[in-house]
Length: 78
Image (cartoon, rainbow, N blue to C red; front, side, top):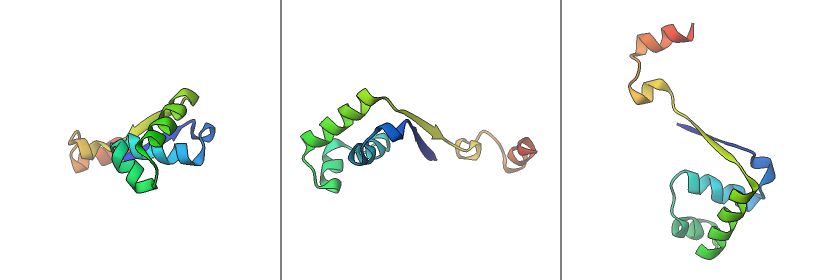
């Protein structure tokens, strides 16, 4: 799985960190501990980033979803 954040150029460095971790499923408390911030600061950064607008795109290869067999997926790429 790969995560792409579109519109990231509008976010500060800390907002990017918080958004990336939040979109990967980490809790506010875990992010706060990881970044050495208070949970309220993490929430503020996340809410500020959301108002600036960004879009998260998750790219999941078909084989990870068991949609194609190994041979069928290679055929589709040709």
